[in-house]
Image (cartoon, rainbow, N blue to C red; front, side, top):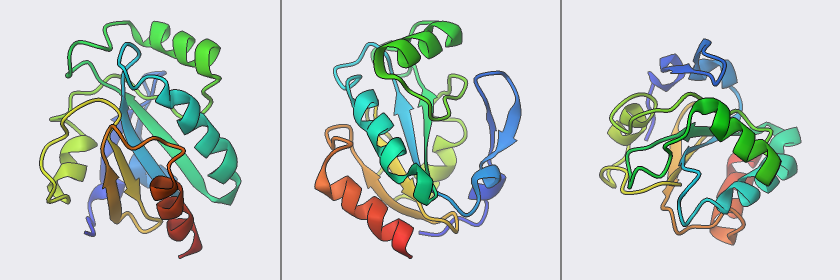
Amino acid sequence: MANPNLSSVKVRTASGEERSLGDWSGQVLLIVNVASRCGFTRQYAGLQKLQQTYGPSGFTVLAFPCNDFGAQEPGSLEEIQQFCSTTYGVDFPLFAKVAIAAAPFDTLISTEPAGPVAWNFEKFLVGRDGTVLARFGSRVEPDSTELSGAIEAALAS
């Protein structure tokens, strides 16, 4: 479903700078709520691989640490960045911690009939025009053909 306001959603970068999702206008985005102490944390490796594979074609993973589910992201932003960088080589944008009830997830959820985010590592695929194209649950691995096929289709359109 299209959300004309998605590009105006304000987010805070890991360095504390306020940005708009519109700064990535024209890109295909995968917006993910992440946690460093979750059973799905290993998905960072797959997300980094997606970034490396599709980044040159106009794709970006946007990761939002979240401590809402099982308190599985308790560290400071500096600790999270260090963990992601040294453990998984993450170089895609990592943002300040968010609550699921706040931007960008509240805006994404308002466009999605699937209900509230249930756990860490839920993924929202956003098209170049800001349309939420698909939502993938935590169990959908970044290297799944379901996710890579959706990304490839979004990049082709």
